[in-house]
Length: 77
Image (cartoon, rainbow, N blue to C red; front, side):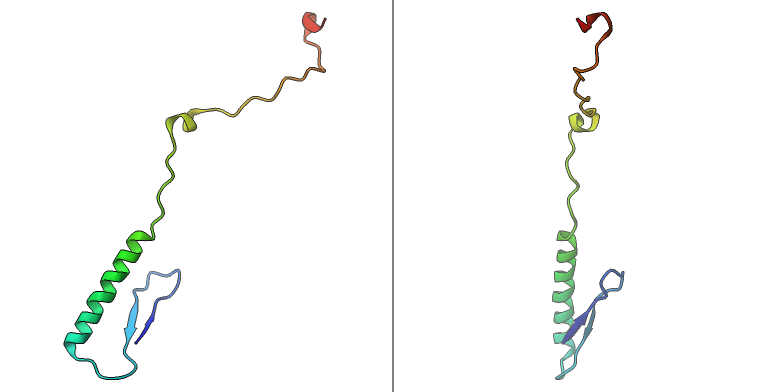
C-alpha cells in the first residue's frame, strides 16, 4: 500500500494497492479506517487561537522614562 498527499495543497490522500489482491470488503475496511484516521488528524492539527484578555487588548505601551538632564522651567532648581 502506498499513500501520498501533496504537502500544502488541497488534494485528498490517495491510496494505491501495489501488491496482492484485496477483496472489496478489505478495501472498504481500509478506506474507512484510513479516512477516519485522516479526519481525526486534521481536526487535531488546528492550532488554538491565543487567549488575549481585555486588559492586554486595551493597555497602552509604557511611557519613556523622564529625562532628568533637561530642566523643567521654574522647577529646575
